[in-house]
Image (tube, rainbow, N blue to C red; front, side, top):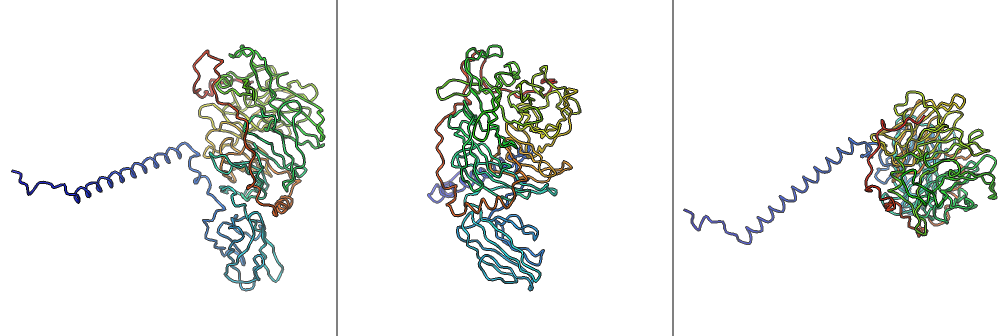
Length: 576
């Protein structure tokens, strides 16, 4: 029989102990569940590819280092964030700097002296302080009996973005430009950065407005488009800036008669230029392709202009490409993704011109929403040949052992010609299980064939891609920007992956710096920008035009609008 002595008494103390145990149990359970979710997500990311950036390449150039200079050589130096690691054959480095102060750690043999900035030359193991401001550089001199070697260390701007780099093989030598935002998922400044093959920033600039991409031109200038948030050259303010390497505006270039588009700009050897537009056209009957009558489209157009802006040649897809040449799989997506002008009128981005390449007597263009590359006669503007997409009388026959030969390109960008070899970035857009490829085909116009040569992939870094990307020759090898993945790969002449460069967010392209522009030219440009306050502290031009893309097109009520499943490779093509 229960007595009052063995009954549990709910005193304030007992109640407090019970509540504490309850909270501890819930907390432990929450932590265990959280770790379970983290482990599960990590496993999912690892299985899916591209989900664990640390496994692909580490973050470099941060303050997490210990500054140990090492002892491989008779003299060397470092900072906590210096990149890359010291090598006596390399004379340029970057580092993070507290404004006006950076500690340099030195180690040298007794008979070798090292002079850091304005400090006296010494030998042995010691630390010396340099006092540059962000963006400025300082010298380190290694003095031996046989002479003095000078090394330049440049301080990165205070808000320079983090980056990743991993070297697998000896990379092809060269430099290239990317354009990337500072922080993923946030509105911020775009950084135009020139990198070398070792993942070292060699030049940088932050425009006072949005931009899609940029490039260093053969004449030593820098080109990048002005953007205002629409992404497709629909705003009348869009233009292309031509600036010096010191950031000074030289001129502004515009397409004549329609808004300038940012996807391509070409400086020709004779000084002329190619400028493009997504040229609006209204009153188009789209009923034959499943739409409505009296609708608007954005034709792909380009002009060849003289240096003073005179138009020598113009081409417009609306004069040469019928709507039936657009794959139906893209029309289905166009109804879900209309674009609006500033008066609220719908235009469909049915063509999506993204690259223009002069080649012999033709212009070779890439158009994303046709899954095609086209050869256009320079004189007549007629289509001479076509690779990929809907089969037409101009289509080339695809031959070779391409596993996707029945439909070789999808959402393609950056078509280039080297002799008779076509290179193109194949995104594999909206095709189930298809990763982006850097693709090469041999074009034979006499026999009307396109013969598969080979393709590069990096499924760990780029398991899929929605858009963008580039594929260029780079020194003795190749350079690939993997579409909407934040990775740029270098491949050597044997086709082996030589390095990965990781950016905060994807870059539209990675464009090699022409051989006519040297490291000294880039360095002089940074020197010229040193006296000014960091450009990144200047206010950014506000985005005033709201492009209403991604809104559903209520004018096509024939079916329920919603997510569109990926296409199957076996259901596509053949294209030629």
